[in-house]
Image (cartoon, rainbow, N blue to C red):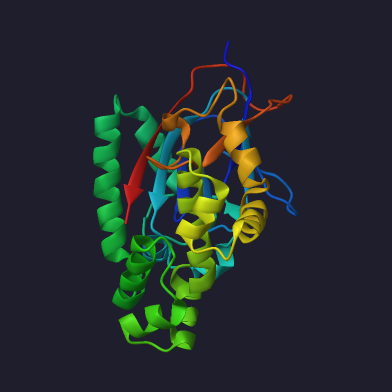
Length: 277
């Protein structure tokens, strides 16, 4: 029997669109009431969230580069930072509600057909959406390429903007300012190195933290646990399998002890991820 599941999800360099097929997922963030939704849009984050379901969840999770989310939805991304919303509450370029897209995906016989429909819809959606700035896309690419290590003044100079211009455009089209976005990308690399067996001291040096204490403080603030707690939890007898992490090759999630859940009943679990942007 499939049992209720709870997972800690840490910040990643992407926004998330989950097009759910049937059962809901409940998402909880510190300081906010839980959101229980079938389809979910999660904006850019700097804090962890706990997602849980009753043992069955099916759908397609689309990971969006933050600037691509701005293009698709046209919503200033700073309004969605550390928030979880029903995607049909956001403006978008599709004539039909996203719940109808989710239903169409669920009705298809296999993942190849579902991904084909997604590619077709997202291409039309992107062409009709709000264009993102080429300089923002370039600046984001530089941040990703350097794992957040490039200094903000240099990043602004690389794209021909002042630091103030870069900050304003990032808040609009990425959601996070360039400094906060760099923190998330450094954390992402640190998780990757730690779970690969690097020591905290070595990880701190490689990722550009001042020292091990700086790494530990940033890690705690953005994941809710220390580096040691995170890596130990990943080695528990029932670890997170690579397929359960939200991004290939990244350590993004921790399985937490289950608790009673009043949502869906037991059933088979399946999901697929699609990258966009």
